[in-house]
Length: 95
Image (tube, rainbow, N blue to C red; front, side, top):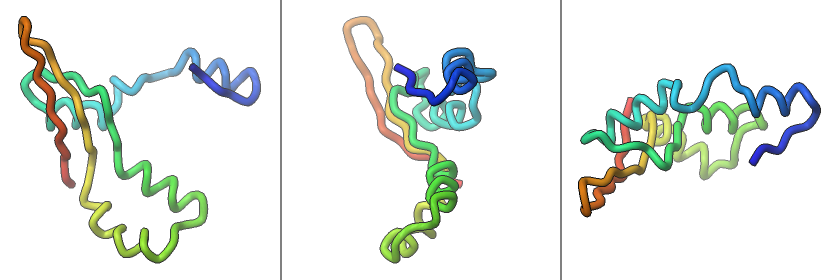
């Protein structure tokens, strides 16, 4: 599903120059999950902090948490099947 404002935004969303799988964050997620697991959830913290700053910062509670959040590169969850067995993992990579 894509929500876009204008034709250019819709084209960029439907035919992107790169995909999430091409990103460094996706590579980090695959590495931190290990064992050939494919990420099905990925939270890249640096862009979250950039977005927070771009919209004018956050409240005092968020700012107290910021030093801890800045240490996180990605949080990922994923899994793989091995015959009839399903394996899953949640992991984080730190900077």
